[in-house]
Amino acid sequence: MVTAARSMDELGINQGTSGNVSARAGDGFLITPTALPYAETEPADLVFVGPDGTARGSRRPSSEWRFHRDIYAARPDDGAVVHTHAVYATTLACLRMPIPRFHYMVAVAGGDDIRCAPYATYGTQELSDYAIAALADRKACLLANHGMIACGADLDAALALAVEVEMLARQYWQVLQVGKPKLLTRKQMAEVLEKFNDYRSD
Ligand SMILES: [Zn+2]
Image (tube, rainbow, N blue to C red; front, side):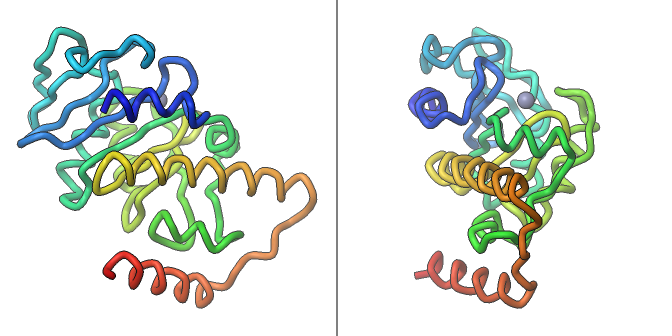
């Protein structure tokens, strides 16, 4: 987890101490602590949070632990969650713009768009509720005026998806500088989703 958290800096998807990473552990999950730069984070700094929200560790959990907890509770297939304020994803999130089906790789997040959850104060149950709704049938979402969430079966998958979402956000942002993108049809996206599903089940 510490390696994954540190790699967020190298991958260019993290801003200061704002992101966080978690992985399912037993009936709860391990999450990066609040207000500690990843370069200084050691495995002993990770905090265990139980299903009732009780934290165990020498540090306090990231203030965003609620949506991590609720993702694990609601989504049995997810084993890891990455949350970042990556620049391009956050740019679109501040415009409260979902990422539409402008490129077939949008399907990597599980559907034909990447939704943007409504705004709520960071760390609140309200934000978590909005995030869970925006993630329905998806593996990633934007959070209005905040950042993004990417989920996966494990840390590698969640991290790779976060990188992909940031790239899609960057491409979409760039497309908007030139004009209005020609969107793929739902049928075209359904074909891509089917291919992705076949690939995953191989
Ligand atoms: Zn955040």
